[in-house]
Length: 397
Ligand code: PHB
Image (cartoon, rainbow, N blue to C red):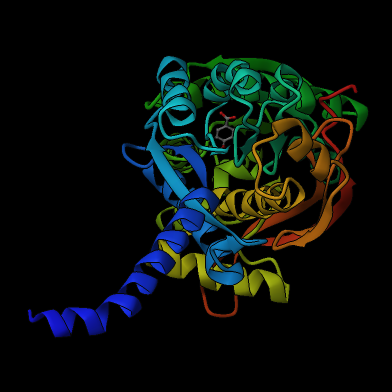
């Protein structure tokens, strides 16, 4: 390079360099990290991929910058319920990665392990799935955009009795959301004039369901109520219910929609046909905003038929986080961030929703659905009735 050439370049390049430094300094300062913990590998990987698809669908539609602050998502893999690992991952995200927000969390025990870290870390947690009512009382810095088992299960009592099914065996996974579901169903079915004759709790890691099906047969139940966490357990349960002949024998299965998530329906096919479930979200929900959401989530997940409810929890969770970022002008103030979204209402792909200012849990419509084929011959959760503005009845506050 000649001296003349350098001289000619210097003022301009110095300017450019100063500009670039200023830009990168502001970009650095203004990037807000959101740590998302979920099962991205292992048997529940599709549930984690739905977190990712929902979060990325929101960014694709709304842009990666909120009120001048760039959002960076930092994913951490937690394949199965593992409170110790959950706590370590959250700690690492807060201390080392300096995330300003935490999101995600599929399993209740993991959420329970993370909430004690929030206050000291000055970080809100927006739960995209974990659905036990009591999580909300474990920290004032938790907001939840998913559902609770109490919320989704309650309308099933009346629905069952209206269909002439009154005597039930209840089967739940033996942990937080299962215990909540068992209690909510018992209350709901008794209020409607039915009864639970036997309540069975099975280990969370149960994979062999034929002995349970035998117990249902032996109990002579008219109806079965069941909750298991969505993923391989629900697929195995619904298949066994059909394969062992209980469905054909006329025993009626009623369940929250965890048992018929859309990503399982192609594999379940006829085994799930006619099942009545109640839930906060169906991929087939008929609204413009849902159609746009499903298209964006399918694009993010890379294939049709893989999108299910954890995606909508993540999508709405990102909306809530964006409101928190705007309300705090990008500064790290967990209390102010949570305060800002209390009472926040919006139109979600699932329907109208609101963050209950008392409980910080989402108030929403719960839909009664039936597994059926749509006009294109695809299995869907067809909405047949709706109960609007359902709060979490499991929380007394
Ligand atoms: C939970 O652990 O809270 C949980 C997991 C999967 C579900 C529902 C609840 O489908």
